[in-house]
Length: 477
Ligand code: 5AD
Ligand code: SF4
Image (cartoon, rainbow, N blue to C red; front, side, top):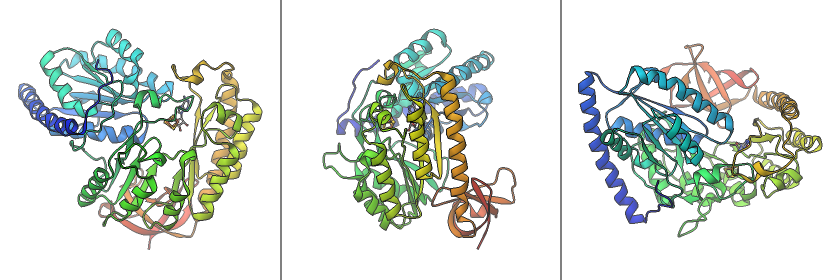
């Protein structure tokens, strides 16, 4: 393992060059194996977790395609299977172990198959030890900081013939300009920062994603301009806490300033971002959202709990009152904004009164939708050592009550747009009825309406005729 590795700027540029050399080398090995087998080799990437991971998976797919693999949706048939893992909650880890067991059986029948594991779970030393000991059929293990080395690790695996493990504890560098294979031609995630410095007491992310690092604004703008030239009309700016963007740059810049620059990019139609931490959401950002023509009318603003007492124990650095004030300020500036959130139920020491405070926030804010989570104890976080862990049955009961409240409210909130006409970005042919297409509104709601392939990737106006709870049926106008 290589602890505390960091690269200077010049080294990072050099690193890009080195990796392109490994891509060429890997191509040779893939070609040879493909000739031996008499067919092209295929890959399947499975992503667990958040949008940052989804974007990382596009980078993995980009490298695999460059070196000669073709995509295969069914992992049972793939020659190279990679799991990009998540460890935010324990059940994500359990799913990975379960699926690895199945892969082992498949690999026994296809010994040339390669299995790689990467992502947040691999940043946990206990996990890597377990893989080394009990999952010896895994070929490559790497973490969140050295994804750019993927081609190099593949070459090492071809050359060594044994398991390759390379985990970095942290990094302060960002290696740019490696291949990416986008899932959608018309929209894309764009990393603007990596890591997190907040240390919310329940959260493992700061330990597995490392310290906060922002990309240079020019690198972000150049990437978006290239994406637009390649047909992208909507970007999602990604970071664990986008509101603190730019603080660590040599020439510091705020997130609002970055948005103003991105707004100027010609041909770019829509800008989204996530995630916003309430403690860092500035008046300047609200003003940019108010006046912007491109920023979508949607804000994901995780509250986590409605109890100021619990928020303090969570180290969230705002109170219930401050959060509600913030919501009011945003709604005043941008009345048609859609608000969504994350909520954790059953944080250690949460009482019935604390939980009632959470329900109260849900009723006051009236979220368009909310992701609700049962608290999951993550070893190494301060909350894991707290006394008064809440009994499972109590948590389950609160979770069900919260979910019911959230769903009832969001169905009501969703229906208010009935009869209006909205501009939507057409994303796909409808899964269930191929005479329909599915479009996404600025506020993130979906509408299904008659249309065909040629509309995909286009922005069109649609009349919302009927609300079906969490989505609409409509027709193009
Ligand atoms: N248990 C449950 N939910 C968690 N989250 C983060 N850590 C935990 C945990 N230990 C949730 C938070 C965060 C979202 C991405 O995942 O709500 O906003
Ligand atoms: Fe985790 Fe808090 Fe950072 Fe979000 S802001 S990634 S919840 S520590």
